[in-house]
Length: 38
Image (cartoon, rainbow, N blue to C red):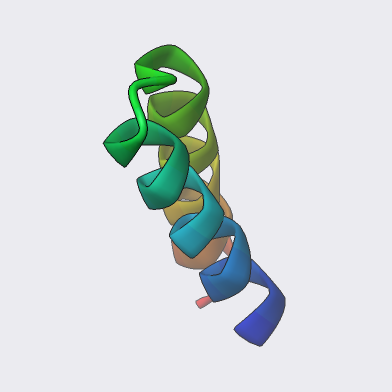
């Protein structure tokens, strides 16, 4: 789960610096994998 959270942080950071599509995809895939695992 910690690996997923680090990817989520990366996605949020990319979204914050303006690379919005990459950030959204990373965050969405992280949330999806999180719900699948739990």
